[in-house]
Image (cartoon, rainbow, N blue to C red):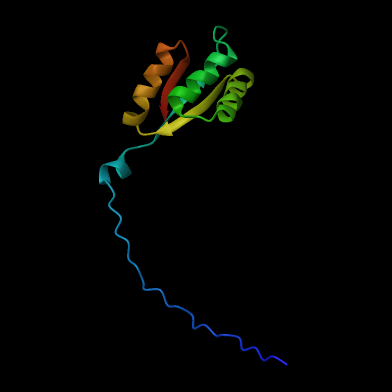
Length: 105
């Protein structure tokens, strides 16, 4: 007959770690905005989806959903951020023939 002993492990105590987070105060005080994409009768679904993927960094599925919302509801919020972040994205959408505006929350 064999005798087995089960080893016992003492729980390890992890040291408390304080993490310092550096936050730019201006980022906290800047109001958030969003780009609203509007429906039109000119652009194809494929073009709208490509623009949302390329400029708004949407996944193809997300871009497709937004394109359908725009088509059936007339508009869709496609990107949130600060005005500084959104302005070049908005301009790229306009340059590609899409109808969009930047609105504040």
